[in-house]
Amino acid sequence: MALFGQAKEPFLRQFLPLEHGIPSHDTFSRVFRLLDPEQFHACFLAFMRHFAEGWPGVVALDGKTLRRSFDRAAGASPLHLVSAWAAEQRLVLGQVAVGDKSNEITAVPQLLKMLSLSGVVVTADAMACQREIARTITDQGGAYVLALKGNQGTLLQDVKLLLDDPALALAAAQTTDGEHGRIEVRRAALTSEIAFLQESHAWPGLQAVGKITATRETQTGTSQETRYFLLSEAFLPERFLAIVRAHWGIENGLHWVLDVTMNEDGLRNRKDHGPENLALLRRLALNLATLEPSKASIKGKLKRAGWDNAYLVAVLAQAAKSQVR
Image (cartoon, rainbow, N blue to C red; front, side, top):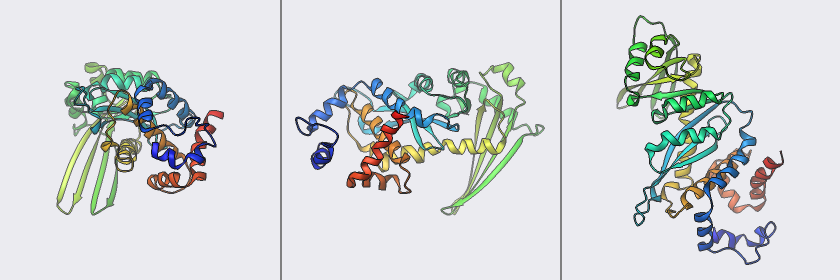
């Protein structure tokens, strides 16, 4: 940041007085270490609110660990963040930091309460398949599709028993994709006949259960995986397939970009609030690059913003426009 400021000083002086020149490396470090992350996140949410309003779709929740943010001297483990990702818009809507991945259970409701969920389908992996999280989503007017594994006692066994019953007629659909030498067939099946499940488990807002079976054929052989889900609406099977597939966009569209394009996993910020604040800054930069309408890749946009002052102004101006609106 200090080197960028020195190289761009004439450009930056168009917007900032910089009475004492470009801040040093140590000054930038102190600012981000001491900046209140809750206040910084509130500013981020205010910026994103304009872009998130009126865009119903899938919001995926998932966690990511900043692997190099551990601090051995202080005995601090790596920072773990839970992000809310608007799948269709490919935008980060918010994030919450947790000290340990097991604390996602308490962090996710905090994140959800910051968002507008009316008309939104929230998806999450099995870690977030919790009663309080399901209740929070439906209380805020949203729907959910939650992956179900063995962390809910006998619920998974009962769902399997129901969906694998050959006497039960299931609504079903499938898609076939072929790329990179691989053929993958995904088949969705679901039912809203869940009276006995609700008698036993009384899951908040539950209206249907479903499963997706993925069969992959490659040059080395064939594999099959079946995943089970709790749904707060009896979606059409085609929609169910699309929702689950949209959830995995958070891996390719957010986590992969942060690691490969922004080198997030290799960054060594570890003191105080520095890792959390700089992580949010990266997500803000990613959102601004995504909102810029040209067809270039995120990597190309970030490079151009560093080279081309006029383009950088156009990218940053989106933040000002959102506040005016």
